[in-house]
Amino acid sequence: MDTSGHARSFGAAAGQYARARPGYPADAVDWLVPPAARRVLDLGAGTGKFTAALAARALDVVAVEPSERMLAELTAALPGVPAHRGTAEATGLPDASVDAVVVAQAWHWVDPARAVGEVARVLRPRGTLGLVWNVRDDSVPWVREVWALAQRGVEQEMQVEDPVVGAPFGPLERFVTGFEHVTDRAGVLDLIASRSYVIVLPEAERTALLGEVASVLDTHPDLRGRTELRLPYRTWCVRTRLEG
Ligand SMILES: C[S@@+](CC[C@H](N)C(=O)[O-])C[C@H]1O[C@@H](n2cnc3c(N)ncnc32)[C@H](O)[C@@H]1O
Image (cartoon, rainbow, N blue to C red; front, side, top):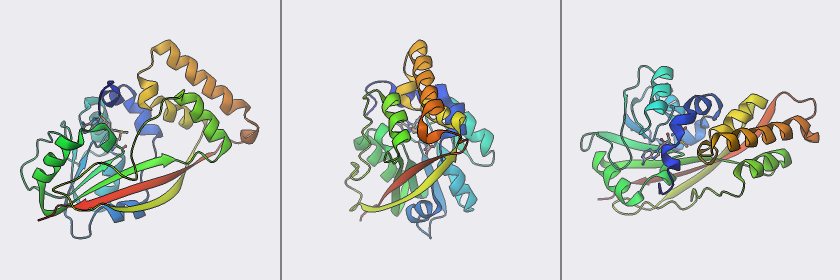
């Protein structure tokens, strides 16, 4: 779905991404990776937010990511994890070499028709594909205000409930959980600066936008006197298994 260059934009904000984006809740990781899985591919691994959770479970992890700068952050944070450049459409891994593939916050950037074939190729028989997205809960007024400003009407379509997968994978199973990301003013600004639609703005527009966001954070009545900012998220998980 990379029609605009947004999918290739992340490297330019890799540092902010690594600093600011939340990780994934433990119950989501447990649900997405089958207990019998040993070798797991984190595909579209970015700076390693999901990779870290896999590595902490003593799994044999391999990370694949197209952006060199995102990969550099991953390797700095997780030097023991083999990581290399590749895409969901061309991972560079051997046939039938992993038990599970997880794609965290990235399936909406791939071409599902090609990625499904590639993921099926690298999975062992009955292997699983897990998709996960952290989605901000905009029911908190200041959160809604800040992101409405940041998005300026740009809607990212993530299809978290019904992503396109299809044969040779079986039916989709779903699980939703949630968590609070505890951050601060600088963290919110980095979070916004790491969004693809902000990264691709001309520099003057990006600076102006971040200035407007800072002004909301500094003046919103609900944030008066607060240094710790709590961002609620829902985590949408989908898993499916190779059939046949
Ligand atoms: C929102 S980030 C998610 C990164 C990481 N998985 C995480 O959870 O933090 C999206 C990632 O998808 C990567 N990406 C974009 N197009 C891709 C593709 N066709 N195949 C694999 N990854 C892709 C980007 O480079 C970026 O690192």
